[in-house]
Length: 244
Image (cartoon, rainbow, N blue to C red; front, side):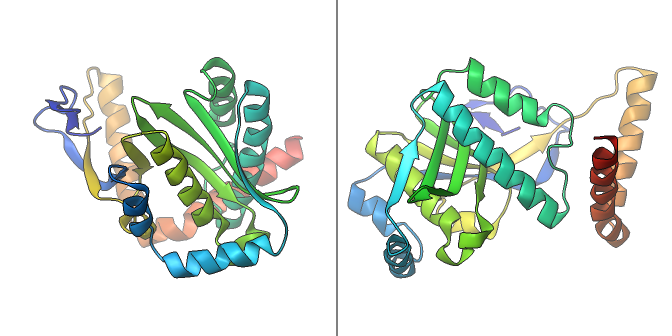
């Protein structure tokens, strides 16, 4: 949770909360088109990549304008993210409810006013896509993926920058890169948001649960966990395929 909500202190972050080791990152969108372009990193190389990409076919950035279009793009996002999870051996859509959340939100929330789904394509091939949210003049980058076969063209970065331009053209105040301290965010963002967590056990069962969670948190910080963690999801996926 952030320390402040707008201009007000966040009442859910009382004394005793624990600072998290990662932050939120935001790019303000104030200024002219030229100002925004000047803040884009690696401008010369990105211009060259766009030129090379256009030689492969017509390049298009498209925002879903209906729930049906959003669902079609979302399937591309989920498929691409699943391949990425498999490559990196991290928890994917095996987590209960994860896939269902994105599907339900796309169907139930206003699209494209709240749920925002977009794609970057070359000809008939989608090479990058994203699922995010728009709220209160702020764009939230949430679930993004790209086709690894097109990696040499940096499709993810080109898609992000198309989204930034889209938001600026519509007068949005901020582009929220969400949680995580990936290095690329520092090249865009001018605001870092410290995040906190508070956990309280209000019953014996709750206190036991927190003790177990803290023990697991310690285990995850060890080098042994880094070696074992990918194997867990290899086993989970293998069991899922066997049951299927």
